[in-house]
Length: 298
Image (tube, rainbow, N blue to C red):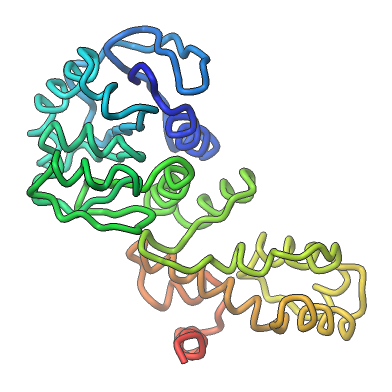
């Protein structure tokens, strides 16, 4: 926590992790007990920088409103020296580092991004190249992982990255539950340029379709029948089919299949096998999953 911290860079991931329940315990540390934020409010109750961090810690470095000035302050320099002292633990993967927006500059100034793939907000890319000439900087990316170092493009992408971390550490069901609670949608990976199916077909105002979509996104793995979905939408199966084609340009079956594909991909990113990923997402078999995947590719 630094003076001038971008409030959403901090509160976005913090609220996301808090909604994951007991899986995370939040601690706020910094060189001073009170810091003014980008929106004029002051955050207080900040604990001093600890000598060490417990193994398994996730250290979040948020951005600031004026990184060209605020990352050169005495407070920022004290954090840089603190990060340098933590480098051995970070290099041994005992601590995971998550940079939000211009927070990547703070990591770069501390030597954490040398030889690493990384990204940051598009307005800061040029300065990141100067701060970390040995880094492999990726432009136009939501977030980038290189081993235990994660960097994100900034502001709302910090929420994307937090959801992705929840998915990796707690599983896709927990990540989806948090995303639904926040009314945001998690992506399959940091370099996915496409909107996920959780959001792609939501640009309409028809209440019956929204009721059907709410039910399907809540339990995509369920053995849904068209009549059951139509009952929840309060329309006939035939009318629901017509509505999906008219407003979304896709069938109910294909929409559900895309949701299941997204869930299966999350399980695969989690390191689970194809059979587990397929059945957990609602496919009858890995073969059905592969066929659905092929249809999307083709």
